[in-house]
Image: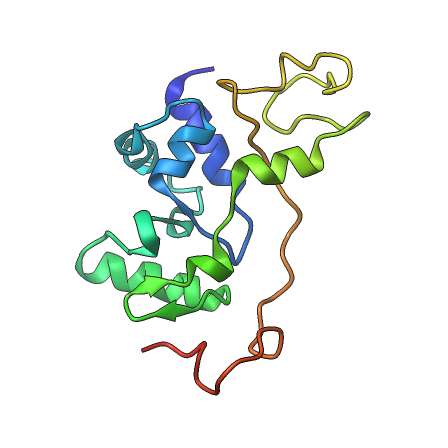
Length: 156
């Protein structure tokens, strides 16, 4: 599979209300330390959830109007911020962990076009030696699920 297609597949798998960093996408696709490839994969790919990919530490790296649009789209999905950064402790999505949890005996690997299962071909379901994939859609994150001092989950 071509390089950019592998990266785009990982980006397409990010669930609503979750975010992933450029570096995590590259690593999950089998290209560790190649975060710039993720940026390149996002260019000219309008159908992808581009707003769910952020810089390290949850920082929105896009300047100006594009950065404001990304922040707005994330807020509409229920993502919370602390200052100018996404609350990664609440909204980070780990592609490797999600796939390990979901792929089991008799399930179809979403990153492959074939219908072979992990149980029948364990070596073919790994992409670059790393397990990646899709997880279930998360429940909406509300302020009642995370008790703490008032205003802790507010933007600011």
